[in-house]
Length: 145
Image (tube, rainbow, N blue to C red; front, top):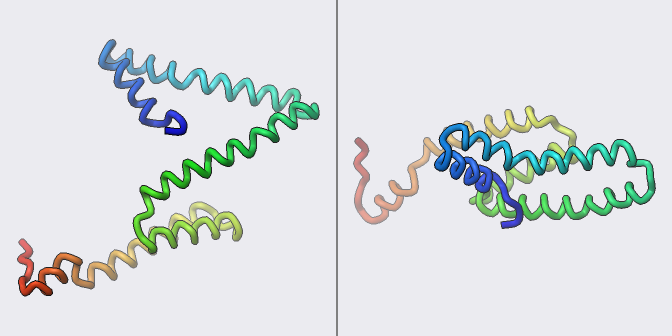
């Protein structure tokens, strides 16, 4: 695992809940988030107050490639699990192109993908399913209840 994510957060809350009940879960979840919140707050204050200094600007510019690499690795891992076919990969690529290059709003992209999903679902409902086609090839028909 690259970074602790939702699983680690949920585990902390679960352990706090098991050991000390509802309030243990609340405290464990809060204390899990607080350190990273304070680090981000400190970096934000440093950037706002001292961002004009050349060595501070260089430090933040040096962090950019690392952050981009982390995002690309996380994106690749999510894409391997979520994109299971060429249609899903094509929709993801088209959504990226629309938002990044064509400056289409996220809301319009999401509405377009919903409409595409409805249309593809209706087209798929009109054709026989994989199991029905396989049963027909083997000489059996599927009984629907």
